[in-house]
Length: 300
Ligand SMILES: *[C@@H]1O[C@H](CO)[C@@H](O)[C@H](O)[C@H]1NC(C)=O
Figure 1 (spheres, rainbow, N blue to C red):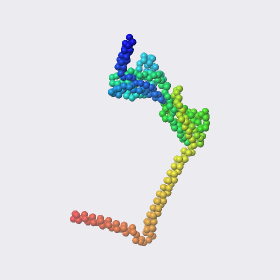
Figure 2 (cartoon, helix red, strand yellow):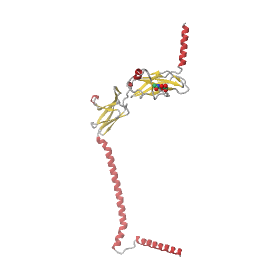
Figure 3 (cartoon, rainbow, N blue to C red):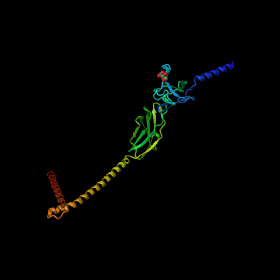
Figure 4 (spheres, rainbow, N blue to C red):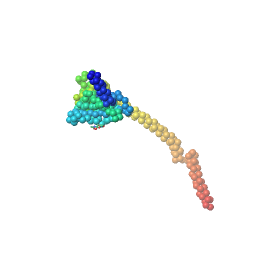
C-alpha cells in the first residue's frame, strides 16, 4: 500500500511538472520611490527558443471586493520582454493593490506569480530633495530638482551658530522649485536644509548647505567695474580717432591753403597744379576735334 501511494504521488509530481513546464517569474517586488511605482521580477529558469514575454495584471480594493475579483491588464506591460513594469499610472488610489505577473514562451504560459504583500502607494519612499543654495545680493536663492507633484518642500533657514529651534521655516509647492529668502544679515553665514512632505509622508532631510551672505554691494562691484572699463576704453579710442582726424586735417590745410592765399594776393607763381589742369583741358579738346575729323573722313 505504502509503495503504491508513493508511486501515485511521484506520478502526480511528474504530471504537474509536465503541465506547468514553464515556471512563473520569481522574486516579484515593488520598488516605489518618490511616487514612481516600479514592479520588478526575476525571469523563470526555463529554456525558450524565443524571448520570454511577460504580462502584468492588478486589482485594487474596488475590483477585489465589488467587481468579484476581476483583474485589470496593466496597459504598458502586456507581452513585454523586460523584467520590470512602471505601474505609476495604474495604481491611482491609496488602496491596497494585488499585482501579479506571468511569463509566456510562444503558446505556453506560466502560472501567475503574485506580489506579496499587496502594495499601497502610501508605502512609497520619498528621497531627500536635491537643492542648490546661492546668494543674490542680500537674499538667498534655494532651487530644487524634480520632486513628486502635489508634494511640499519644507525649507529650514538658520543663521550659522543659531540652534535649529531658531530656524525660519518655509513651505513651498514642489512644482515651484524656487525659494527666495530676504531680510538676511549681511556678512553672515546661513545654513539651509529641506525635506519633502506628501500627505503623511516625509523624506529624510537634505544635507545642510551653508553660504555666506555678503550683501548687495558685492554684486554691483563686478558690473560697475566692467562698465567703467568699457567707458575708459571707449574714451581712449575716441581720443585716438579725434587726434588722427585733427592731424590729417592739418596736413591738408598746410598743403592747399598757402597757394590759395597766394593766388588771392597777387601774381601767381608757377604752381604744380595749374599747368597740369591746362594740359588736361587741351588734350580733351584735341581729342574731341580728332574724333570729329575722323567722323567726317569716314563719310567723306
Ligand atoms: C487582458 O489581456 C488578455 C490577453 O491580452 C485578454 O484576453 C483579456 O481579455 C484582457 N482583460 C481585460 C480585462 O481587458
